[in-house]
Length: 284
Image (cartoon, rainbow, N blue to C red; front, side, top):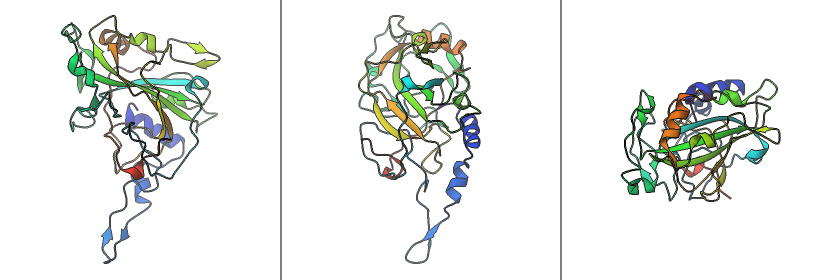
């Protein structure tokens, strides 16, 4: 998820949790049969981690927590995006590379290889530009709609998901992977945003894609390049990840980056795929 270290550290402190490195050091090291110091298992004691290959249900992490309610019964508290997909699925399985600091890694939509010249037409000005570059037609992004059981309203970073009355809320992320196209007939990001929308007393996105396959539901954690197989996230998050890519008009994304309630102006880096079974929950 986004603005990663700064928002997550604030949330961890608010929840009274230690940092990832502190958690790891609490467990120390053991010794093998020959008396030599043995490396501690990765992220010993942490709950299930994210992102993952959602086509694989395997997981051996035994730390469980109750999954959050349906997102329609929770408050939308943040929307942000990552450059390339953090998760992996059949429809987004093109490896982007090892990258650096979370950029240039992750996975791309398979349909990005078969876009038309019109869909790939360059933009008149950069979209969502940051120190790590900008977004281009043909790029893949993963969008996260973060929801909280706390009585909160949408805002900047994960801090918006907390309140003074509830510093340990259930968290749920609805995720969708998109390929960006220069086509105003494609999905419009404004239609997927917030804009003050309320439904049955809850803050809600105007729309979240419902035709990109049945979402894969599982227990996991927060994400982002600050975390790895050796530095794990201590937070518990219910994930709902859609398995198919959708085309999204890059012009609408560029406009959203210029002004939105979440002060988001670029796509964030990704955490590398978690594959160690001991770090994953079983998808049931």
